[in-house]
Length: 187
Image 1: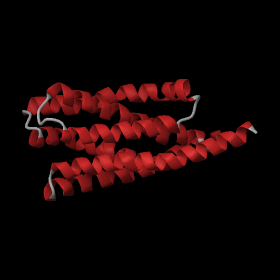
Image 2: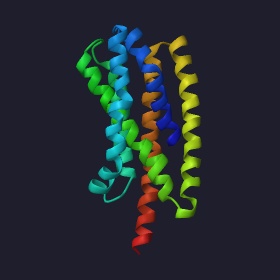
Image 3: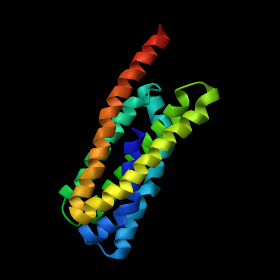
């Protein structure tokens, strides 16, 4: 799952400036301003992920991950399906992408990895998850460049959206495992 988080995270952070410049036809300042909001607004997802999963899902991490991946995939697709140049809509979509990328980034690679075992292996589990993030980051750069150069921006966006939806699909399995584990703990 963490591979797909990082395909979206790295793909969007590294490539959105060019997307807004070449596909949406913003000028350089506008393209930089919009694309630069992705990690900035994403901070809201980072700082709220644990609180939201604790408050609304009783400490269960997977329901929030699933919801985040679905919203993320939809937000990415809307970049190509909405009118070509609408500054405030694009800013809202970038905000959504930032927030809903950072939530699973924090929960899957940080909180869930650390909570998956004892305190003795928490840092090893987080590092192991991080390895998969780097695999996703590598795939993001190579695949996005390939799609942009050979098929166009729309296919690069589809690639990121599909990564988000695959993350949602895989989270369903993690949700089932989390539910089973919590049920066993209650018994």
